[in-house]
Length: 147
Image (cartoon, rainbow, N blue to C red):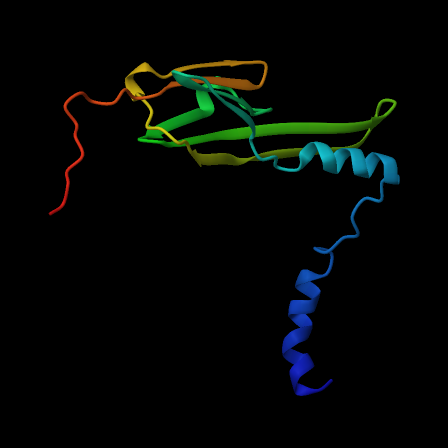
């Protein structure tokens, strides 16, 4: 035994068994499981109307209590904690059980400032709906000509 292996052998013995070959699932089950457990970004539709913007944001796996919406001028930020669980079975035998817990977020800017006091939000079946009224121009604002 050389000098170096005298010191590394106890470490090799300690870590032996920690690195176990992962479970080998059939290809179709493995692909389905990965597709369901990958953290998803928030998918959105934003529609502009005369007086407001309407936003539909898909946040599957989120609870209403875990969703946060912030509006600052024309900047809108949506964030949420997401929990997804997936279990693959073959009859009564569990082949794999996995969970994903994490954060998803999305920020975007609109062409007009938003009237924060008039924003309305609802969440139903994994879809967040926002009504973002455009801020009215303040009367008396005028353009200044520079001489």
